[in-house]
Figure 1 (cartoon, helix red, strand yellow):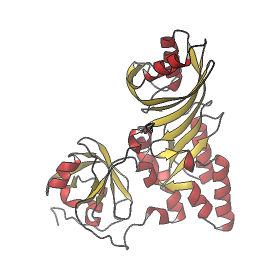
Figure 2 (figure 1 turned 180 degrees about the horizontal axis):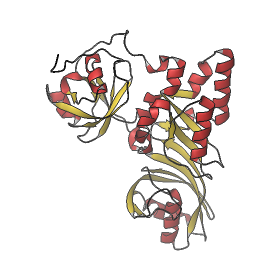
Figure 3 (figure 1 turned 30 degrees about the vertical axis):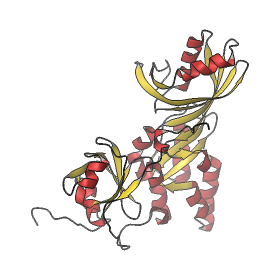
Figure 4 (figure 1 turned 90 degrees about the vertical axis):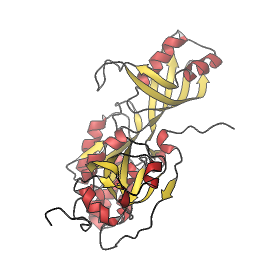
Length: 334
């Protein structure tokens, strides 16, 4: 049976309950139930970028449609590239880096410059899986310096004379155009990228794509009729854009301290993903599913499960506003 190609964020993980806890319905809110304006300001849009505009132009159009001051995309797509372009909206832009650093998947049409036996094409493509060296193209958004990028998988879907259709799962920052060029060098005849579509970014794929026309229609329908359902379908809660990160569910009493920038201690843990490693970027969630903060793990999952005291994670980026949950801590002056 053929193995299924998965990005790192798609690999199954277990969630372990360490302690029991309850949440007070008087504080906070289930993300999907936020008031519509707050829902938009703390939302993520899985946009289907069309052929032609730049990623920055698309962001500007989304801001104009939704009447937002801020929005941030998950990683640029060239004007000739289409597909999955998740976008953090409003206040959610503070955590857009979590999406930019997530793995990507593309469907690529590569053209080789001479006819090559299919078996050899497939073998050479497989040689490019794993860590590879890449020098970004002359026209790129980053400094031209050799760097290492991981190719998680290359699945050659079809070879038709000089055209090769392949699915590529790769680390953020991989240039598929350069990958095609390098494959051509190894084949000895040259190759170039003909067409490219992004099909996955972290937790997002083509199943939940929304076009700019969909978004505009939904927003106008809400303004004119007051019906929020279509707009809530187009925009997803910000937390869906963080679901690829390993997470910890924390007590209500620990939320406000973290929102003030405090480190997160072991007694505040209710449950956690068992794949957490020391040094990982993780996310803290409330029992209602709200994102509280992005943190750097100071322990691995096993140590968190077996410890009663100590710092489990250092807060790096606070997401939730302070005072949403009641203060469960006391300063020395009190």
